[in-house]
Length: 399
Ligand code: ADP
Ligand code: MG
Image (cartoon, rainbow, N blue to C red; front, side, top):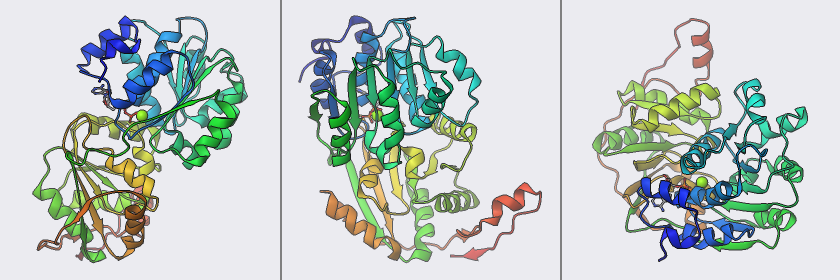
């Protein structure tokens, strides 16, 4: 195992690495940083939480100078991730003082336009970057380091065309780095088109089984929510993420948890950006310990101290399962994944088991009290009626 100083990283970054108390590079960092700093195009595949951000940040920081136009662009699938990567870059570039600007939609565009005139590095989502391109308020012709972060996610979310349009606006004399938790044939296709003899690096893809325990319960659908409440009350040493497949399901779970006196917050694509940011900050600060979310909203976020991941619904796509479980057992901490299956999850669960080499232990359903379910999953009127000042209609069902 090499040390950070042996990878060719400049002293100003080494200083912040030391201040962050990173003792040694992760596998993907050790393998990719020397090649990245040599200027090679790199495709890096490794699980979430393995430190890919620092790997590409080294190149961006070392190859950019203050006040010389936008020299680096990082594309991310979500707004939250743009915000997070931009914060990390600011942290690692503390002793170089680069100007780093996150650019994403859902917030007003004018302040962004102003910042874009002076910034050295942009971290953004494809939609808003394209918007700026069409207004001529961003100039990518000087981009020498282009990073596609969470590339698999960007393609899954249908950003391929947007991403291609953006890549074509960057200088051809550039280094392109592509990072992804999973590497599919679509990714290779994209790499073949826009990268220059890329070197592929991958690190151990799955979590350390010694640190992560995965279990499942198989219950009747009508008992599933009660089981969740039961388990949440039983053990909660750290932060908890509860994943659902749809926004409706997130609303159902989060509202009913609150009804059962469990402090929960929800995040999904249906909330305004301001609300999403506020929610994430509450969770980061550990004000609230249960976050109920969809895959999209939680993509690539680095939240420290997640001890439990619950799958209230089993995801359709088995790659999402890997992304979800990557939220816990990070940076050497222990984590637990609890899958709550009912009839409707069996097909998805079989797919997860078929596509991945996982060890998920079956648990007997304990004796559980049926809890109050005040809001039904299909009760869409809730939001509207509240907006118009009426009391929401709630049906009380005991199960
Ligand atoms: P990825 O992009 O691979 O999902 P991140 O770059 O978000 O992972 O890193 C996950 C977490 O690990 C971050 O909190 C980061 O600060 C931390 N980290 C990165 N590299 C190291 C390291 N070498 N040692 C300890 N922690 C690290
Ligand atoms: Mg990442």
